[in-house]
Amino acid sequence: MEKLCEIIPEGVEDIFYHEYEIKEWSISRIKEIFRSYGYRPISTPSFEFYDMFYGMDTITNRDEMFKIIDENGKILVLRPDMTIPIARIAAANFNKISGSLKLSYVVNVFRRNNSIGYGKKEFMQAGAEYFGMSEPDSDAEIISLGVNSLINCGIKNFMIEIGHVGFFKGALNDCNIDEKRLMEIRKNVESKNYFELERMLEETDIPEKNKEVLLKLPRLYGKPIEVISKAKELVLNSYMDESIENIKQVYKIITQYGYGDFIVFDLGLVSNINYYTGAIFKGYIDGHGREVISGGRYDNLTQRFGNLIPATGFGLNVDEIMEVLSMKKMEQSFKTDYLLIYKEDMRENTLALARVLRQNNFIVETQLHDELFKDFKGKAKEVVYVLKNNFKINNIEKGVVYSCKEDKFLEHVLLNNKITPIH
Image 1: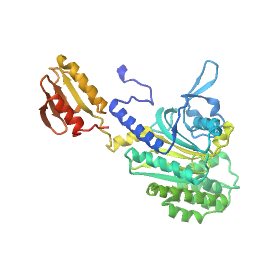
Image 2: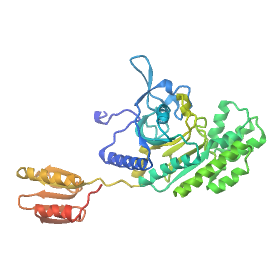
Image 3: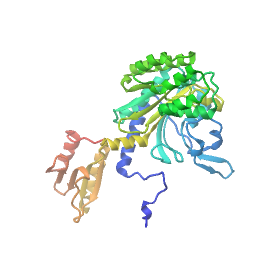
Image 4: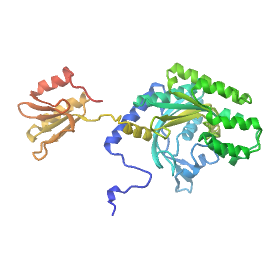
C-alpha cells in the first residue's frame, strides 16, 4: 500500500529544501541579470481566458492547456506560457511610455502532457521581452541577455543555435503546399531526418530548385561564417537574402557583447514558424539533451490586442537549470554559518548573540542543548556551545576546536572578519 505522504499527482513534484535553495539561488541570479539590463519585472494572473489563445498562433498547443469553467460559464486556462499575457500588457501600456518597453518575469506555467522536462505539468519559466524595436540590436540584446543569464547561474558549457524563419519561408515562396504537408516538411527539416525529407519532397509538386534548397537546409548548421557562405549559394529570392543579412548583423552585435563563442547557426530551425517572424534561437547545455532556453522575434503578436508593436524575447526553463546544476554537481553550499547550542540559563544571551550575527548577514540557528543528541557535524560551519564563562567552538570545516570569551568571539567574527557569511 502506498504511503499517503508519497502520493502526489502525476506531472508535479515536491522540492525539498536542499534543491529548493538551489532553485531560489538560480532565480536570484537570473533576476540579477534581468535587472542589470533594465528589464522591469511584471506579474500576470495564473488564470487567463481561453478565448485569448483561441485562433492565435502560439508556441503552446491548445490541447495541452488546463481548462476550467468559472462561475459565469467562461472557459479559463491555467497560464501555459507568458509571452501572450505579456503581449497583452505591452499592447495596453506601450503608448503610455516613451521609447522601448523591456519586461521580465519568473513564474510557474502549466501544460498538460508537454514535452518539456519529461512531461511535467508545472514548471518555472523565466523570461524577458523587448517591445518597440525591430533592428538587429534588440535581437542581439535578447540573445546576449539569455547567454548572460546562463553564465550567471554558473553554467559555461552551452551553445545557442540561431536561425531565421525568413530563410525557410523564402525557400517555399510561391510554392503551393497544403498545411499538413508543410508541417511534415518542417518537422523533418528540424529533426534533420534527411531520408524522410527526401522521400516527402519527391512526392511534393514544387520546382526542383526549391527541393534542392530544402534538402540542404538541415545541413546548414555550424559556425556562423561557414553557414552564411553556404546559405548564400542557395538564395532564391530577396526574402532569403534579407534573412541571411539579418542574422549576420545579429551575430556581429553578439560578438561585440563578447558572447560570439556561444553561437552557432542553424537555418534548419523552423518549428513554430507561424508564430515567429524573424531571428529565432534555442539553447542547449553540454550533456543535457533538452533545450533550456528558446525565443525569437514575433512582430505580429500584439496586433491581436489592437496595437502592432515589434517584439522579441525568450523563455528560460528554470527547472532544467536546476537539473543541470545537480547533474554537473554544481550545487551551491547553503550550510548554516553558526549553530548556537545553549542551556536554559543561557537562552537570553544566546538569542541576543544570534540577533547580532543575523544583523551582520550570517545564517544562524539556535538549539537547546540535548544530552541525547550530540552529533552536530554537517549542520553548520561552526558549532558554538554558549557557556557561562566561555564559548566552546567547533570549526567543522577546519576540524579545529577552541574556546574564547563572548566579546572575543564577536571580535573574531565581526572585526577581524576571519569568518565571512556564505551568501
